[in-house]
Image 1 (tube, one colour):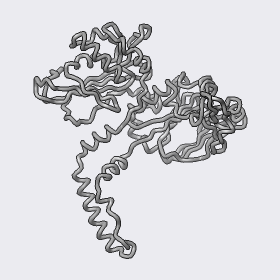
Image 2 (tube, one colour):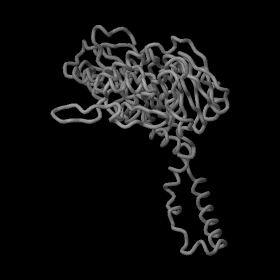
Image 3 (cartoon, one colour):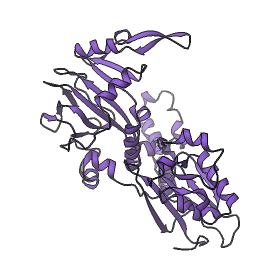
Image 4 (cartoon, helix red, strand yellow):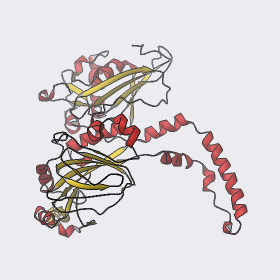
Length: 421
């Protein structure tokens, strides 16, 4: 391992977790500039479960072709059960967390909600389970929205997918009774991955023959591909993961927002002289070509990566905040369930001001280089007693642990939870 004081190289340490909570880490040593693109070392477990071989998916299907895969019925066991849906609907859920669709149209709140007193005030949008039951009996589809924010097992899956894809994802669940169709044939503006959780459904997707998907099956549909689905003899519960993919167009358009010449208004009366307008456009296009040619692709790539915002689902955060006060040398901690990258930027050898940047997706921490060994230990993913963090005094160990708990990079582990993650 190169010295932490090697002024010609940057150091990156990555810690990540898979769906089962098992943390994997990778350490790389490679020349990186201070604005280098951070490499990825993420397990392909979530993406592989959803689409099969990630390389084949990326090369053949991503953004272009639909893909249907049959799977083990147990592949997504525990992700969202029918009893979970019952629990969500009966636990005071409100619009827009829940909506009900019939014949392609959203039903009004009065069809599935009942006013109740909440905090001394009457609210109109609380789900009424008895009304929902009637809607299902009438053939309507119940939609549970934004489960990537509210249901832990789905939050873990979508967080892992988002790390692997680098594109923002979201998740809704659809419960449809037998012999019904919730949505009319349509195209989505984003890619989707469908996971069949219970029952079955018949799908019609442009480019594929009509087919049935059963429990454990998955379906990938790129944006713009027309599709529809319906149930036959049995009900269906499926999860739709929407992928809000970022395109090259969006990156270039953001760059062009800085080219102020494009905001110049067209000449007065431009519609009366096509030759004159063409001459103006020729100048604008020439200027734009020069502007794009002078753009730094690495800087643009770095800015694009920095704009990405990871979902911040990290199990144990709330409890950890409550426990941060008594954190001491005997406290057990572990890396939170998210990717952390530790980068040392090149400085002069022996420079006491050398710092370590810790990237947490939505922000970057700056720490003294003396914390390097402790950060390496935390990023290996296993549990660790604060007093065992290497390279620091006891006082510094506690100060660092409290800082990282407050910054949500690590969480405090209860004695009952101290198996390696």
